[in-house]
Amino acid sequence: MFYLPTKTNDGTLNGIRLEKFKKKLGTRQMPTAELILDGTKAYRLSPEGRGIATISPMLSITRIHNSISAVAAMRRILNLSKDFAKKRRAFGNLLIEHPLHIQTLARLEIEQQAAFLFLMQVIRLFGSVENENGSDKEQLLLRILTPLLKLYTGKQAVSVASEGLESFGGHGYLEDTLIPVILRDAQVLSIWEGTTNILSLDVLRCIEKSKGEVLKAFFEDAASKLKTTSSSLSESQTILNGSLSKLTTFIAKKSSYDNLMYMKSSSRDLSYSLARTYMGCLLYEHAQYEKSDVWHTW
Image (cartoon, rainbow, N blue to C red; front, side):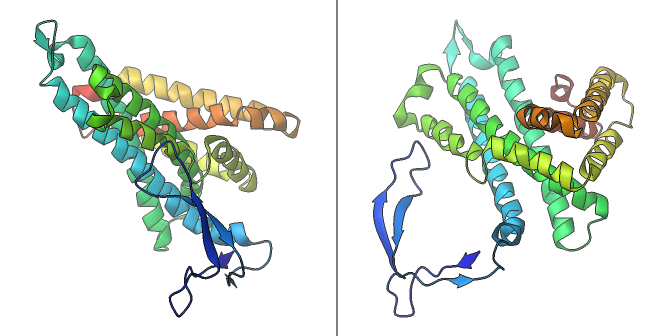
C-alpha cells in the first residue's frame, strides 16, 4: 500500500495527468477520471505483499459508508413515494386510499427498516471494536456482518429505488423530476467497495479463516434476539427459528473440503440467506419495543 500525494510542495500535480472523464450511468455529480501516472512520487506504507491486509480496516469503514448511502437512498425514495401517494389521485381516490398501494409501500418500508437496523447494528459493533471495548464475539460478528451488510443493502437499494420509481407512474420515468437519478445512483452501490460476488467469497473466507467461529457467533447472536416470546409475533418467531435451523444444517453438510467448489458457487445464496435471516431477527427484536402493525407483515 502506498501513500500518493496528489500535489507537490509547489502546488503542481505530482506527475498526474488527466486522460479523460468517464461517462457513467450514475453518480455524475462526482466526476471520475482515467489518470496517467508518469514520474509520480509515492511512499510505501506496508511491507511488500501486505497491502490488502494493511488497508482492510479502512475497507470496513468504506463498506459501512456504502451501506449508509444505500439505506439513505431507500429512505429518500420511500419518503417521496409516500408524499406523492397523499396527493396523486387514481380511480377517484388518492393513491394512499388504495389498499394495494398501501401494501406496496409497507413492503418497501419494511425493507428500509430492516436495512436501517442492520446498519445500526454493524456501526455499534464497529464503534465498540474500534475503541477496543469489543469482546471476542463482537469482533467475530463484525467480521462477518460487515460484508453481509454491504452486499445485501447494495442490492436492496436498487430494488427499492426501482419499485419506488414505479410508484410515481410515468412521472417517475421523467428526468426533470430527478427521480431517475436516485435509481441510477443506487446501481453503483453493489459495485463500490467490492461487488456482490467478491463480498460473498469474502464471507466464505472469513468463515474458513476463523474455522467457523464467525458462524458460531452469528447464530448465537441471531438466536438471542428470538428468545423473547410474543403472541402476536409467534408465527414470525417460528419461521425465523426454522430458517436458522436450515442454515445450520446446510452449512454442516456442505462445508467439507469435498464441497469447496459447491460452497463457492452457492456463496451468494448463502450470504443472502444469512443477511435476510439476521435482518428478520433484528426486526423481531425491535418489534418488542415498537408495537406497530408494520412489523407483523415481515
